[in-house]
Amino acid sequence: MGRWIDYEPYASRSVAEFRAKRELCGLSLYDVAQELGVAMNTVKRWENPNYFPPSPAAWRYIDREYDKHCDQVEEALTKALASARDGEPVVVLWHRNGMRGVSDKDVGVSNAVSKAVAESLMTLGRDVTFRWSDPDAEDAQRESTSSYYRRTDPTYAE
Image (cartoon, rainbow, N blue to C red):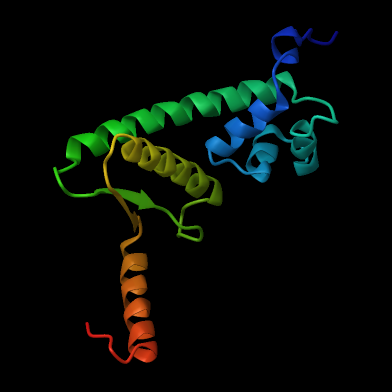
């Protein structure tokens, strides 16, 4: 005998809410599909008002991820404010895909937290600057920027 599922708590929820929470959490269609064991097209259809709505399992998953995201943002914002120095911009780390040992999902989720923290800091009137979380990327960027300007701008001086 199958398990009875109460769809009522989910029936009134908007598919726009599902998509917004997914995007706010930094989750791709692929991430959600992988986690729930469905095809990516299924997730696309859940987010389209002309198709069937997300399953209760999908709603529970996206609600858990959103709650986790909010907790991570609150924690990161508290740390950022505690370490901020007056008159100096707050440094927010940005992650890049392709980092060894870090999945694209983790990068998306981390950057969603970084973005929310930066937006909160700016709302509070704080200046924000972004840095790569990978020090090698920072070094590579400095070198390529310097090299580019040396080649293209005759007035450039380091």
